Image (cartoon, rainbow, N blue to C red; front, side, top):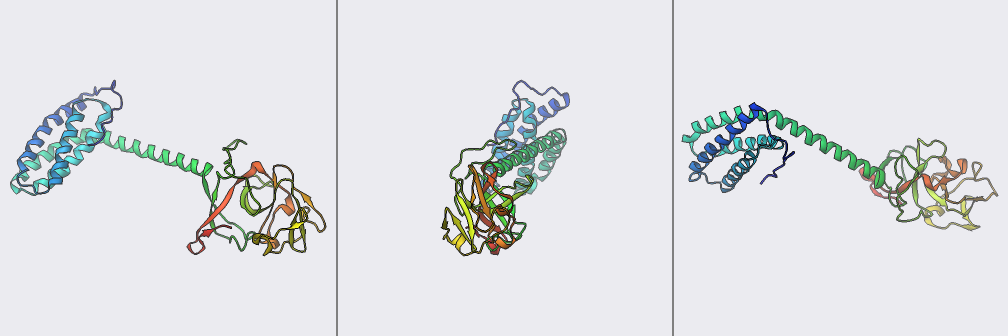
Length: 304
């Protein structure tokens, strides 16, 4: 049975034309029920008869309460009845004339109800679009967001044109238009590939690999990263050569990472604008952790 939706129990139908069509439909429903009873012996599709019967019962319940909120639903039920009358009439050619008269009257009545049906459908579409938009905004802001890799600074891990998904809730998603954050599930770890707001232009988002944590002393010596005077031997770093470039990665110079900040580098050190040139990423500017490449198909993989 279709749900009976009342727009407002204190909002009865007052339009004379609508009331006339409403009463006319109530009388026609009895004729349609008589037509259905007549065809029961010849119709072999029991499911069709059950749907036909249920549609009549639904319509009677709707018509018993003259509320504006029911107008659009009545128009939908009329469409269903038209289908059932057309289908069942094919089982008994002798009933086609009677079916034609019923259909003609149904279509005539529906010209009154149809504008309300159309308005109801438009309202449903608008509501669906709004809900979908809001849901997409919530997901994009707090759960996961898609990014496109614009440059080769993270080669070979990420290539130009790769489409990736970034987990935004793991570090505590930023609340849009504020500096507030939701509770984090985990703290950023060395080796994470992170997306953040670029300190040099807050309209841009950058993606790099996290190297230095708050309090770390970072130094690049002979292509190797040293943290607190110890070489970083993790495969994410040890298989790459890092260049001493920029004010924050000069030779024989250690850089101390401030509180609530991070030092980040591109995997393609020879072609990456990263912390070596512009300094540190504030924790408040973290957007999330890169999780997966989802396009192109041949590049689908977890990001490590």
